[in-house]
Length: 491
Ligand code: NAD
Image 1 (cartoon, rainbow, N blue to C red):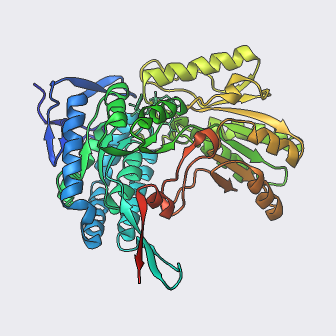
Image 2: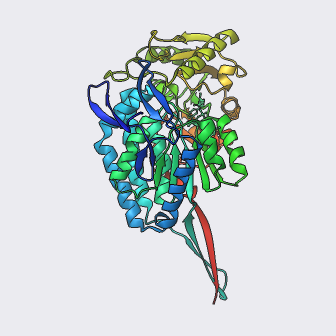
Image 3: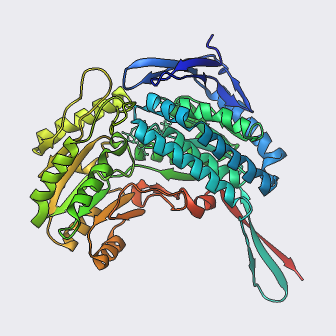
């Protein structure tokens, strides 16, 4: 039998206690069938620990606990209480930030540089959510002198939350923060490969004073318990981040019980460099736009378009800058890019590199696995690509970028919009009019001008087209966790 917590030595030498059980109704418990699943460190390929793996019996128990917590007190709790526990949770995340960052790098493979940034955003976001607790306003509506009408925003109920492996703790916070502050309770399923930070943070929820049953965390298979959550009649909403293919399945499975569904899905985002841009800054932005977090970013700027007059110059600078990025041990001080998160991802990425070469694209730099132990891939630039190549069309989710030329604004807008996705886009130019005009014409939920991958807890994020439904962060996220009730009274 697996103990409910195990001591783990982090690569930085520090020892911490890692919970391994399901977090249900305020306690860590084994799964009903006692099945476990191994968790692998992608930079060493060694097993870190096992954790209990939930089945649909556990889904039923967790949903029951979440429903009881919703009905009994949380949905009508004082806003001051919800603010207080979210502020406290943000403080606890901050106090444990180094441990959490190290857990994240060990579990996901990302560089400590990335993990520290993630954890910083987590505490900022939870604090921001806490601040909304006493600002969830309804409206008073003028319907004439015979009636008085007003509307209020009410929570939905139990929310099933399914998150991916690329930002395990950050996605955890983007899901539980807005759900909790609006009075919902949650059953959250981390990704199979990266459950550790969500379980560690579950104990911080308890320490923060979040009542039992309000937050439940159950690791397990997407196909089993993910589907179980989508079909459960007492789950009122599914919030999902992950691939577009899984997003479609989730919508179908949630349809029978007409659940509310928000989806944050994939992307193939264009990153555009105009000839009048500050080229050195633009090159840094396009490199960070794709290679940040080992390219495992839904909004990665994976299609770079460079205006023809500066194409060769930008390509040269891009190659040089990429060569300077250190790939390797996530815990080394100057590592920019760590390991890919799993062998499956490694193989998928290398498969796309092969495909690109077969399609006739030119590898400017990279294109290979780095080393033989750990899932490391060289940052890779493909140049002279054609728009119909698979490496230009498909979301690769790795450190692979395509670069091609454009001539005019119309040309690049058409190319940028030629995608099923619409998550984000980058525009690099010193011409303010051009920046604003092009940003209006691009079909994407986020446009970055002379920057990329810049996130803030108050700025909504989400997709156009097949990149998703709904928004996370900012006040927009709260709308996805509340329903409007209208009340009209005869005078
Ligand atoms: P995925 O979409 O299958 O997994 C994401 C989450 O969904 C995981 O928790 C998984 O267990 C769960 N899940 C899987 N099948 C499910 C189902 N039928 N019902 C409910 N939940 C289910 O992603 P993946 O297979 O781990 O990765 C495949 C590709 O997805 C990646 O290569 C990448 O292109 C994309 N991806 C995108 C994001 C993003 O942030 N947009 C994140 C991760 C992966």
